[in-house]
Image (cartoon, rainbow, N blue to C red; front, top):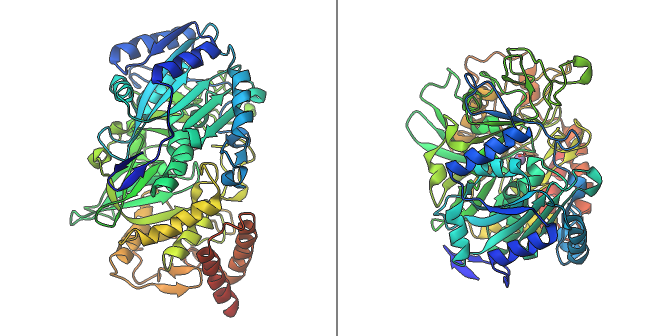
Length: 594
Ligand code: OXD
Ligand code: MN
């Protein structure tokens, strides 16, 4: 146990050294050889040559896409698998209804069975990595053991990886252990097991990013959220973005959206011509670790060093920064290819696919050319909007927290929570239509509190309590807002243009945070007054759009809160009283006005 900047670091006692642990895994998995990865260019040269020779990576057009490669995954292995993702906490109740639970004893014996001999004729790679800036007290070290070269190649881009981390661990720094094998890639033998009390992850049967790059969802969210509760900080599924106004002042926002709902686009937003002098800086596009700073503000670091983003829909208009960033040194997964050997995806806006994501000649009867959850992996520094403050050991101070979902109806464009408990309730009430990032049906509205449903490593009731309690420790609490870029009219068309125009919403949020403007009171929160303080200059919207974008339909909201109330019942008796009071207050106001 140690103290870092007021945080008590709690890591389980470890009796095994790094090499003893690697030896033990090797003894079970029986690899042909073991390779300790040092993160060097020479190592990448060899690895990439082997991957190309084995067909694990295919070259793309070297003239137009230098150092870019395509990886095709097994067609049954294209997304996160929530149904076989487990939290193996000592007590079942601590995992909560939001997680699948397996007892640590059963999980360990399942692991022993599945990992036995699973690396025969393969290489076992040892990948030491750091989540967060190398010199940050908030960063955490980890080691992933894997038999997938694709995983090594992606971990090189997504984390700070290599020899220096290995040395730090060998000198005694605590680390999270991750054991990964492709196994036989059969969905029946696929399991993602987390032991938060042991800082241990075991993943078998999948090579997909969210299941196999263990530094990302498994370590930086599921294990880290458990640690964060014990140590008094937050590990969240949030982008971190800096918004600079023409006066040169930068405000940092953290924003939670469910997977594939535009976090990367918002993090890399390009101000439209109607916002001269404004700049947007990306600190992170997926995960935020937030600590209470000495000044009583909440400070955020991005534990990742790269982006594992959804490709379809990315083009020079929707996300110019991402579009430019992925023109070189990028690994594409499950995109289509043109006859010129260029990557292609739906929404690219030019070119024609010749070969689909499965390697077949493209035929529209087979569905989309690129898989809807096809991805790019790129180093963060390639983003033209990359913020150098991503490297700051103490991170950036957070002015506002945004929660957003993909809601065709009900949720207005933006509203502000009335106080911290109401803000936590607003996050808790987050609901969104499902997307291709997880296996299962898409387009179904599901409750996804704080966009953490697939990622919170413990009981949601305790998690909300942890959020509520933060107000006693953060003297300058961020203000909390809810946004919805996806509202549709009766004809099914989006009412809001989104993308760069979302800066209008952010401007309103920042002006609220600076107490420069007033807002309309409503039971669900404070709303902009269209035509007065909300900047609509130069924007043409469909007729009637404003009324829907800024309106609260009382009947819809009464239903929404009834649904929320019954959702919360599943988490009793651990739902904080403050949340229930905030919920009842909204319900009272909604019904008193009807
Ligand atoms: C992701 C996800 O890959 O949320 O970021 O699924
Ligand atoms: Mn994500």
